[in-house]
Amino acid sequence: MERTITSYNSRFAIGRGFRAPTSFFEQDHGILDTTRIVRNIKEGGNHRTTLSYALSYAEDRLAFVGSLNYNRIKNMALLDSGASDPVSGLPITLFTSAQKPVTVVGGDFTVTYKLTPQLETTAAVEHFKYRFSEMGTLAFARPETRAYLRLDYEAGPWTGMLRGTWTGPMDLDKFYGTDRYNFDGTRKLSKSPSYWLVDLRGEYRLNKQWSTFLGIDNVFDFKQSDKESTLWVDGTGSFDVTNIWGPNRGRFIYGGVKFTL
Amino acid sequence: MLACGGPHAAEAGSAALDFELSDGRAFVRLADLPKRVTVVNFWRSDCPPCVREMPLLADTARQGKSQVVAIALQRPYETANAPGGVLAALQAPVQLLHGPSEPRGLLARFGNPAGALPYTVVLDAQRHPCARQTGEVTADWLNAAIHRCTRT
Image (tube, helix red, strand yellow):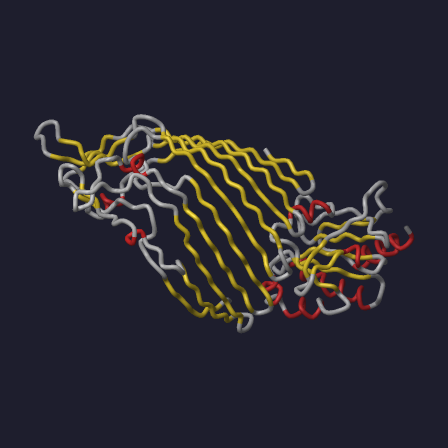
């Protein structure tokens, strides 16, 4: 359902989706903790209900859009590595469904303004709330708040982009549980620190078909491993490398030549 | 997308239209352009009828029948990569401007909320719309529209 009044556009949407999961990455790549996987998934697969509303405004130099979103997923597939075979007692991995629905509610707002004929700036913020009952349902920690600042430049054959992304603290206990330790016995972080990532890229158009570009991702070389390792061990001595909340890769410089037909 | 009505008298009660768009060096306001009949054409390089009608619009501008403003709804580098015939047509006296990255508001303000292209609006000297065409314009339509707008 959509209405437009000159510069404003209002959109409300309802959706329903179905997905039948067949396997997990760990299963396909043979990196399960156990030697056997048992499939015990609810029939009918994942059911997803989505509600969203967006209001946008667009003028010659200024545009903004804000949206609210609600997502509810029933029978979300998950891997349970802590199960045991009821007969042999041997550890197994259970490919199963979450008992309670997963809910993600979020909002975002983006504003763009053309500062000069050559320079455009964008600022955005998004915030999410995750609700789930079983640990590991969403696999990895998710940021609750993110903000973006971006500058885009275009003049003649030159284009340039500078982007800063701020990621807010994540509740690691909520996603990973509290039974996580470093190898020296100290506890892993309960909450991740906030951090900035800065990327920049420039491109020069040689002619209609050829252009050359150079870019740097993560200019200030921020890595999670500078603050905390992804390695963790639990109270039983089992370990994994899945304590992830930040970038794995540091500063990355790339360049190239682009050909357009 | 390619239908349309013919030219008609300045729409009663319609407000004077305006825009503030970039010519690559500065922002250009419609209100600051010379007060005469103006053909405002919205186009994109990947729109074949937009490309086909460019020479007609260029001829109209060169013959001094009206001023012509061509608003490209794409990035400047896409305009630079447009077919040669388009670039030849987009020389002075045609005024080439670039629309915003989100052109919906601009198009709706000029009477095209659906965003169909090509889209042409002819304004009288007071910037009131007196003719609109969704789809490729013809010489007959354009001449009649300019003539009608000149009389209002």
